[in-house]
Image (cartoon, rainbow over all chains, first blue to last red; front, side):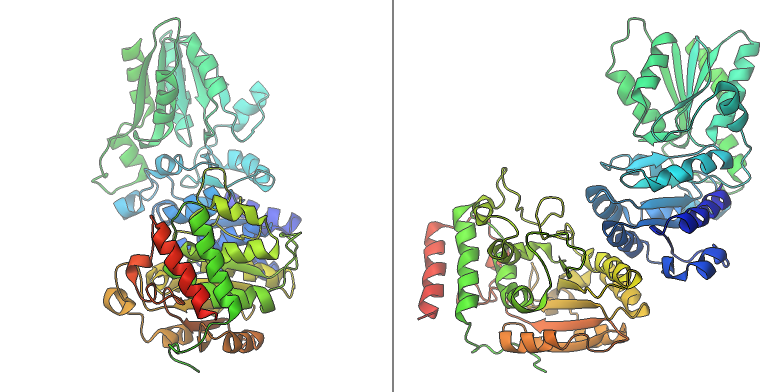
Length: 311
Length: 280
């Protein structure tokens, strides 16, 4: 997903002279082609994320579209105020490409685990937050980032994430749009809402549930902010149980956004709801993204059991 | 170059009039403001807007304009009276300073105020934004310049030095930092709170062509600003030695006037009397 995203930045830059790239201190050879072919639009500014965000805002105020890439935690926690003021308040067209959203950097420990990025950025007016499910969805998203007004946070997965979107998109004739959730599967008993790579688990769970006679809709909320309230509520109205799953703390992210809307809606029939996500703790183990997902039950099995419990 | 302000320097009529306009703004609106910071900036800003910056108040987003950022946004009263005088917005806005129906807040906002290039108020953002502006000017091969006025207290922020590293690396000779070095921050003297000395040497070591000047001496300021850029391969830094609250005996170096939120009528009269008396 990261490779696709950065390759797309290069492709977009070739088409559009407004596109700039800024890295902090990325891996050797990152976007070497961009650097060689468009050196006046390529910057590697050192380990200074706060400065980089404001500098990008300066470029954006002049009409440019800067894409910044570095590790998600450093692009959200470290420079939060710069993101709030220089991107949010000024509503600048800066794109934050965050490496290692969620538990990707499991072996590197809590300093590198971006498990709160969606929650903290969701509080910023004008911010758009997108968590694609796979590289092909990233390919659909990136061209749209040229004309979108305002800052965008793009959450990257690990790389090599299974491709789950394309065949369903084709089958169901779906079109990717920022801010519009994708109904990947229909079902009238339960609604499973996912973001990012958790779409895979959601689809798998819906399959298992169907084998047991429970029909679940799967709504892929790739854009967590702005939240597609219209589609979410249209689907929620029809089902008895609603479950969210995200590779993120249960505080402030997808599940919280859904809960806020559900709590303020009067349904004619009762609903049951549960968030699946990371508990309010710092993960205490290393290992792999997959092993931490398993440890904290971000799995299709967990979705199945929660849906059954709620019904 | 001067290393400190000359306490005997006589402020010219223009300097006194601008200070009166600041006092009048406070008196006619919300009776509050960062008085000390505004008074310390008057000559730096008036020389910039009278003699140095290229701008068109009727077309504030004119592409060829010089970009000016007041990174120490709390000094905005001095900037507002100048922008109003130059015609960026009607002078009637000054009487609505910090009022709910006004565009002029206690810190300047990009989206509200014509002539404001960036919303500042939280310290340590302006220079980084200025680096972005300067890189863009270079990319566009435009000869417009970028000026950032910062505070000495502001220079405590780590981001200032991240931005300084970046400006030095890119050899942004189209970028000028001016530090309003009045030696006081909110709590106490800069020496007590966080001593920035050797201040000029810090800027030099970050790759800036650095000069020092008396920040209330308009002749010296004008001469120095007109000599920019100092070096075609370096960004410019100008340490402007100033006096906080400059121009009034009881506001100079008096931290009670760093930020005042209840300026009384008696105080307004005393301020105006001294400014008027000094001009005779």
